Image (cartoon, rainbow, N blue to C red):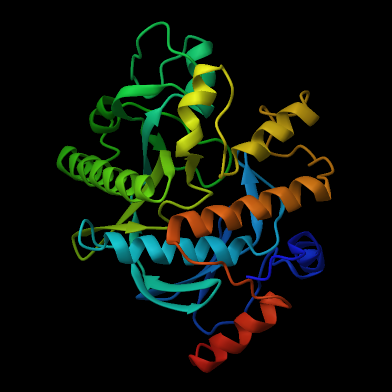
Length: 326
């Protein structure tokens, strides 16, 4: 990656970020998620990773190169973890595009945490239990937990996800007991693998979420894995000293953006309503976030990020045509 003026490179891409798509793919149904556009065929799904940035369950803005980075980081992890759990990937068609198996989505997200921070910390301060998990008194923000905890939530198509306990999931028959336990067991194995891999690269995998689906009775990992959107990453070698001094860790995920929103617009965030207008987002925070995504890309994969500069949508159309989807 050219680094002599990365700020200018990111600025140049502001006018080329991919906000959404509306491709006329024969026999495909379009489903637009928070950050991905999905073209659903009978047996396949074409997932377009856009540059949309979601926070507090709302799409807030677009970040240059974000879709490319997330798609490629996910592809990296899907390949690394395919022996732990089957996943839905068929091929990576474009830096922003994955062609995957069409699965029946299980309506539960499995969230795994090793530290108390973010939503877990905010709930802890308010005295609220997260998914029925009772934590000991006296914890400090960003403290490492004695054991990994699992805090599942419902998967909402819009609005806020709701944290729910394992017992509620099973008692309300949202998921069969054996299916849920297989999901939770796989999630812990994936997380432990991610922790160890990140540790070797000087990162802490703080927490993450996993989504799963079913195809022909197989439970598969779907959506994304260990990306900067679905996970928190901290720099390992400075964590202990910063924590000891009551300071926040060095962050490589989008938590910095959440904190910027709450500091800049405290009357709006974190409790923004589904139909509330999004306030202006500064170029400076967009640039800073793009650079942090790039840093974490290299820390995670060991590879320099190679930004695809220019019109993202046109490049995707060209590659879809080459694969005969048009």
